[in-house]
Each structure stands twice: as structure tokens, then as C-alpha cells.
Image (cartoon, rainbow, N blue to C red; front, side):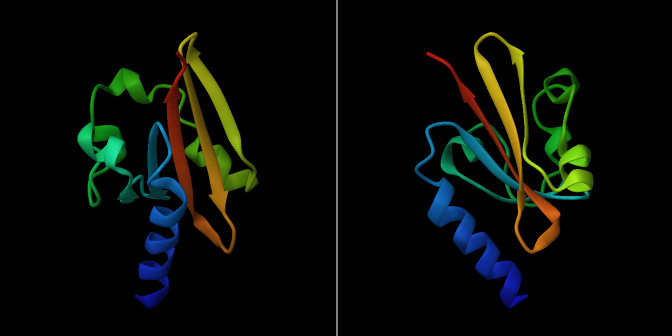
Length: 103
């Protein structure tokens, strides 16, 4: 459990100031941690990420590909949004998922 707490602490240290949504998500799509922007949109720890917003918002999710390849992925579901999935070193079952709207 201490390792999980440290992972969450490190996530917050790196991602709380990010100007978009950032979530720490496990292979079961459970949100382990989220920055304030993501929490404000309903992405709270303990929730399955796909249950937030609409199912269409999660279309094209690259979490499984990121976990399988252990390589960062990104997409642009529209011209104003970039989404990314980053593997967490030393944790083959966890990714950081971020999204940021372009001005």
C-alpha cells in the first residue's frame, strides 16, 4: 500500500499544475488519482473513467494499447483537443491519461 500512496503522491507532484485534465488510471480503468481540473469534471478517484461524461467521449481510448506496448500514445479526437496516455515506469498496470484543449 505504501507504494500506491507514493505513486499517487508523485502523480500529484507532477500533474496538479497541468493546465488540462490528468488522471492516473489502472488497467481496470479505475481512476487512482486526478488533478483538480479532472476532479471538477467528475473524474474522481475510485470511479471507472468510462462512466464519466458520455460513452462517446471515451471512443478511441488508447489505454490498452499503452499498457500493451508500454509506449506513450496520443490522439486528437477533434481539432481542439489532444489526449495522451503515458505508461508509468515500473508499473505495467498504470498510465497517466491527460487531455488538453487547444486555445
